[in-house]
Every structure is written in C-alpha cells, then in structure tokens.
Length: 113
Ligand SMILES: [Zn+2]
Image (cartoon, rainbow, N blue to C red; front, side, top):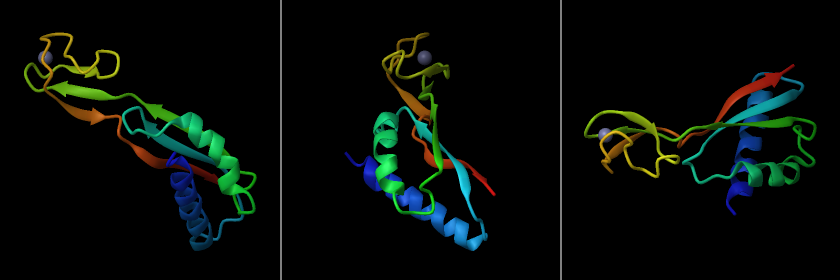
C-alpha cells in the first residue's frame, strides 16, 4: 500500500505552502485522483487520519475527486471511457488509444484561512 507515503507527501507540501503563505489553517484539501492512477481513494481516506495526526492539518478535511479514465481511439479518434469499455473502442473495436485523462494525482484546491 503506497497510499500512506503519498498522503504524507501531500501533507508536507500543504504544510510548506501554509508557512510560505502565512496561512493559519487549511479547512479542506481537494485531491484529484484519476481512475487510472493506481491510487485507491478508499485507502487514501483510511491512511489520512494517520498522516495528519500531530500536524497542522489535524482538523483538515480531505475531499477526493475522481476523474474518469478517458482514451482517444487512434483509429477513429472517438473518445471513450476506458474502464467501462475495457480499453476497446465502442465504435471500431480498436485496442489502440491514447490516454487523455485519468492518471492525475494532484492537489486541486486548498480552502484556507
Ligand atoms: Zn475507434
């Protein structure tokens, strides 16, 4: 489970940002996690309380926004949901695609005071 390491990195990043910008408190962190990123939101939520314990983020809410895994067919250029269609273009049945979205793992928003 690599989620704990990832969450600890996020916590450090946010703490540094707070110091740099003189912020007292961050009420909420919104993370964007792609469905193709191999990071599981459930595990992120499980390890988050451990990662923030004793830090400036102890009372900060974690919100996770999942992004859909979209691919663009290299043969007919149709854009489709890769997971729902099991990596097969629903129009021409091609298996060749470029990933457009779904690999994100980033801080999308910080709600700070
Ligand atoms: Zn196609």
